[in-house]
Image (cartoon, rainbow, N blue to C red; front, side, top):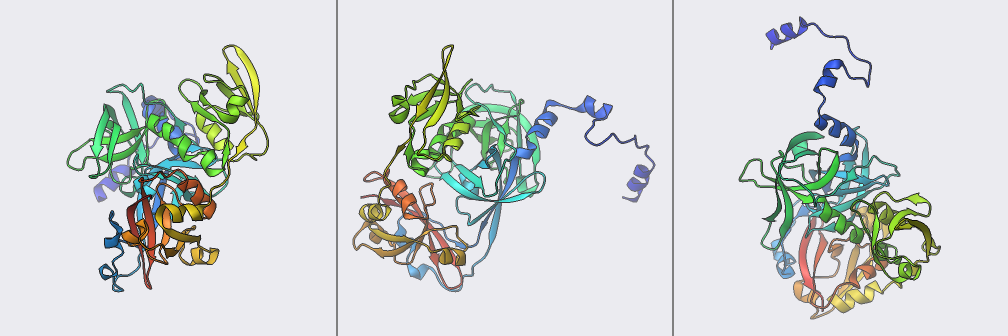
Length: 441
């Protein structure tokens, strides 16, 4: 080490370029990969998911999980943090990542390349497709990345991964697309399909980070590796992500208003489905969407995020293009009655619940939850082992914290459908996270 230090000290050092300028040598060495990283790094984030619990996670039947003989006060509450990656996809602070990165987290922290940190909350989690949408709690705008397309991928084309492997922040790796339409069984019950296979180096912590093409567009979301192999990684195609986002950001579900539009995204933003209020306003399938209330719509995501924040009582003005003709359409959103969440929970599962109070949620360090106050004898919940005072923190891919959210969620559950529940069992010195499925009656 001493010799190395002496040699380095004796080397001639070229004069430094002004900050932000490239030297001639740097310009000569600059590659498309360097350009992609510099253009996208500010929108790629590291995600710290913290569990302030003692975890015991199994699948149904619930009666095994809730048998008190399995648990004792000898266990201690602890804090565990796992690391993952993600990408900001809209300046309002919407982030995509993998479901397995955030699914059981009590706290979520997002760290940008400039080291700024922001708390986040899960908007929706789709474990079947390993996709989650987060929302930063602070006000934007935030740097956002461009969603590309994956239907036209070429085997052998260069791809770039940016992420947080093993805690090494904003690491860049490159490779090629090795294959498409791959399947990967991650458990006896879950198989991911239509995956992109890549030889780009991906490790633990890369999960949820973007897979980029040479244009700097997201073409996939890194999700898994083959632990028994080298340089075999898999990513969720961005087309799959884009198909799922409208439901995960559904204005019908979250705002309880119907507009009646579903949009496509290839080449342009256009209408793929018009019904209800949109159809009555004269909107047709194939119309190109240019602006909504004067706001430019550059991608379908712009529309879905915008309508989440509208008044709902005022008309929505769309600037459209049909053929060579531009015109406007005024859509009056329709209010959708909110179903009775308490009654649906009792009817479908035999559970009586009430929202946690602010004081209860603060004490448990939770954003919210539903406290079980009673269980109907002989109901699906009773047979599965649900008991009074357990706290429901997740139903399916959502995190209902009040009766309105609960009703919006349960009205879509069909008879016989299996629904995954995540509950907290609060003990004196620790909290247990338990998971399983209940079939709706």
